[in-house]
Length: 459
Ligand code: NAD
Image 1 (cartoon, rainbow, N blue to C red):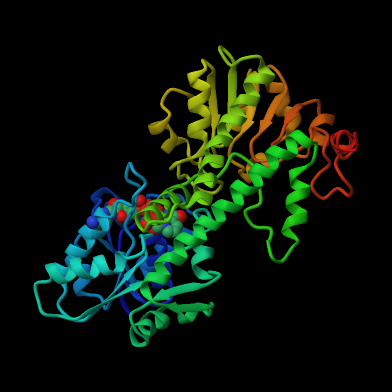
Image 2: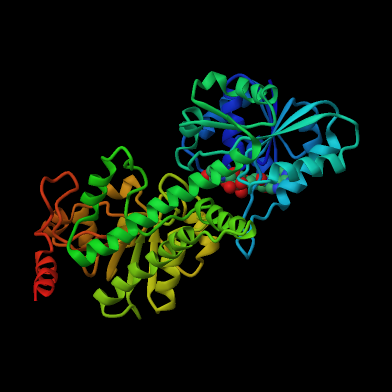
């Protein structure tokens, strides 16, 4: 099939490459000339494991092209995917200007029937908006249909997520139109769910909101565990074994970040408000998430006796491992607070340092994790790259002025850290907790607490 993908970012580029790999002819369109030129030179504008090889293979086999000419892409294609950015506006509303601009561009170039598939994350009702924009701007009397096909890929595993999605959601006005899109995805042999357009749009927001709720929920539990002497890793493991709950997104830490969860949740809260429903649960999810970096820095302040003049090494800047994406990364909040309190910050990230320099120009960048540890008063793990799990911790400790490690992602075993001589501060775990596979509770249950309240009740 002839496909056009408009917007060649994380979603558009991966989608285009995968559809080409499945044997389709794909034209990827972006208005960013430098991005298109980079791609034409065979270079990737983003870091995503496996992407460069897949793009190169399909460009060489003449199934994948890059252009800034939306008209050319639209005219040569039967199915057009919209995968442009939908950032948050100041009030939390979704900024749909790129979607509208794309719809206008499609309208002006349509020469025959097209299926227009919206892959960008957009508020419920946007399918109708795109339809109206195209109706108002089309130059020829041609038919078209709008489909919603929300994307669930995660940066860092985008190719695998696109090849093996849990489900493919296709929101279409009728069965015939849905079948055009089903046909495209059929070679993947994955579960497909056909819905109306509005429900498909809502599925994306509801899914992201639920994931964020799990993250904030476990972080709230971690905060209680800290006070009660329980180990959140064991609690999460016990919860995750329950098939009603499942283990995903129960890792306590600094909270969620990235280009999607934060903005999608703000947008859903805003949409709900517009429709006359106050989404109190989701507002609390946002508040808990916003508090986590401050709690982390607060602990550093307390243990180090103030942050003024202290040197802190940060390991991990990207919003999550295996990506260079710095959008809404927790490192931005953590480092911002450290700098505001007069600390000197050195940082290392395996791939995101270049992007981070634009956002955090005031800090020192190190070439390795060991360099970032040189002479520091404390180290802080902010992104859980695998590389950090495999560090030689003895060598790391030797480079530090003081062996204090704040682990915002719970990647080390507290007992091992203690044996190595670290002063180790995980999140929601007692400092002498066993590894998460250890049998039995990490330390005595908070029996004093229970006893105190029982005695009070009896009195
Ligand atoms: P991105 O910012 O990486 O890429 C968007 C691209 O669209 C940019 O290259 C930009 O130049 C291009 N663009 C903007 N306006 C254009 C126009 N008028 N014509 C042509 N190109 C235009 O964004 P992304 O991360 O790929 O996200 C795209 C959409 O997918 C968003 O709605 C996002 O919420 C959603 N999404 C993202 C992810 C993710 O992990 N990044 C996952 C699922 C869904």
